[in-house]
Length: 88
Image (tube, rainbow, N blue to C red):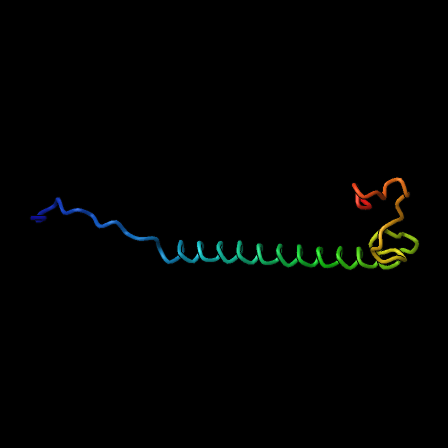
């Protein structure tokens, strides 16, 4: 039925140059994202090391759990140690 000068024109796909440009753009984006993730992981690791070094060097900061008594808590006054409160 498509005879004569009125033949429909087939749409052409993207050229090889356009395909290569898209691929190179995708590669560049992928590489930039990988580099950004690598830098973020490196910064996170450095911050962790600095925090650990800072915490390891501290002395004299005792808490109820890490103090001399090792989680034994603290002494309660005798007025709080009744049968009703059971020491709490």
